[in-house]
Amino acid sequence: MIEGIGKSEVQRNVGVDALQALIGALRGIRVGLEQTGRDLFWLDPDTGPDIPLDVPTVWGKQLVERVRLAIERETVRVWRARIKSSWAKVRAEEAELKKQGTRPSKITKALAEKKTFLENWQAHVENLKPGWSIPLPPDRRTKR
Image (cartoon, rainbow, N blue to C red; front, side, top):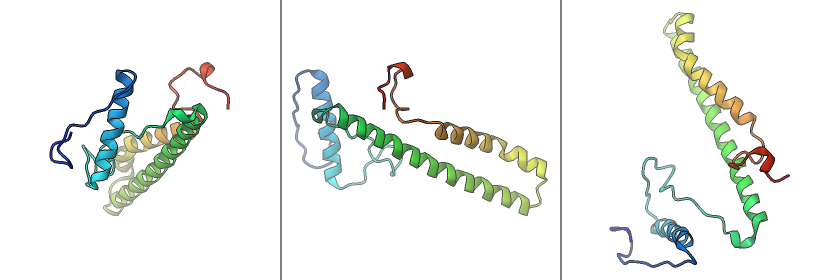
């Protein structure tokens, strides 16, 4: 029950063990929050309540793997878009500093940290291979 949202009643969930019951409870909370139609979030309205969507394993490991790879691809797509947007902001900031007559050495110093961060992030994202999100050593990853 989440006080003040929807029906104010205790709901129950069961599982073969505590972990399965917890996963089912989290699934129910996420669905219940979505059904309210309200814009609920902790820190960022674009993120929402940040209760993960689970992948039903009952359909097999192959489906889980395909969904995980799709999530990886979408994560990389979002990161690339954010990197591109961040570079545009850095270029705009650089242009504004030039327009104000700031010395080139001062502009370089002012933007060095941002550029280094973006260069490193971009290099990291471009080097990712499918399966990058698996927290296992490369020799234990499944062959693709």
